[in-house]
Amino acid sequence: MSLSSARTTPRPRVLSGMRPTGPLHLGNYMGALHNWVNLQQDYDCYFFIADLHALTTDYADTSELQNNIKEVALDFLAAGLDPGRTVIFKQSEVMQHAQLFALLSMITPLSWLERVPTYKDQQEQLREKDLATYGFLGYPLLQTADILLYKPDFVPVGADQVAHVEITREVARRFNFLYPAVGILPEPKVLLTPSPKLPGLDGRKMSKSYKNTIMLSESEADIRAKLKTMVTDPARIRRTDPGNPDVCPVFDLHKVFSSEETQLKAAHGCRTASIGCIECKSWAANAIIEKIAPIQARREDLKSRPSVIDDVLANGKARAIKRAQQTLDEVQHAMGLA
Image: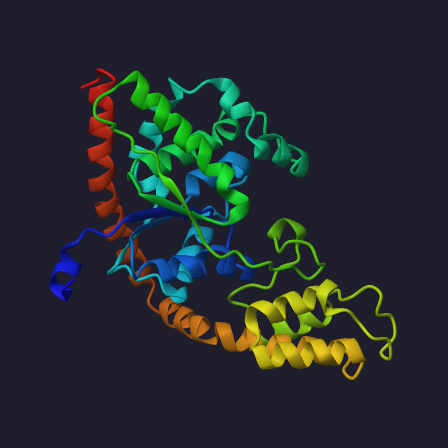
């Protein structure tokens, strides 16, 4: 294939979003954002800040929402999302999301939403919040509307998130059965992306809910201080005790950020007790700091030019609305509303 013909071939479309809960942590970066940056090379990308989704659990206190949106937008651009190649936008500014959500709610059985595993799981985890709301129950359907509005070929997810896309496929299938007008809502496929195990400081999954995170924008001093408190192999009590890197959360960080040489050195030193946990943690800190230094430099530059973020989101809004309205027009026509 010639270079010119390759350029004229439409690229497959992908779409994903991220809730604005404030600055992103290393788990957000390695689990999603890092993959999104790599996808830009080969896909037509739509990535959005899911501020409507934030309201499904945090509707009672929205005082930090606008600031959180700006922090996430900063991290998007600093990490390498390119507005010249990718549509970056704020979900609530494209009201077609809410409109399609309302239309799809007319055809979606209640039982489909009640059986979503995260519905009961999050109610258990977030008992301090009143989640007995229509918005929280309908979260998966809003997610479905987010996806189907742009007719993506793929939705990039980790292996543990495949089930989240299935309800989208079911709703699209039901819509196309009820309104058989040349498959208005194509079923998106799952695009499995790398999702490395990235533990938090306490050994559990890195999450703001657990208060065990290392932020993408964290200073070098804070990263080193936090890592010194990170749990290690529980069986290694004394400095002279040999350890097992296979059960050590710090070594999981080495697997993600350190060179192969450093990994081998850390694993050998741990098993033979020739190094202590503090030294092992310092090597992990070195690797993390080196990895995120360019991102932090770009972030500082963007913070000094706030109009850049505003311009990117405004441009993304216009491009997203244009594409979203096309789908909404087709759906309204199929349902007899236009």
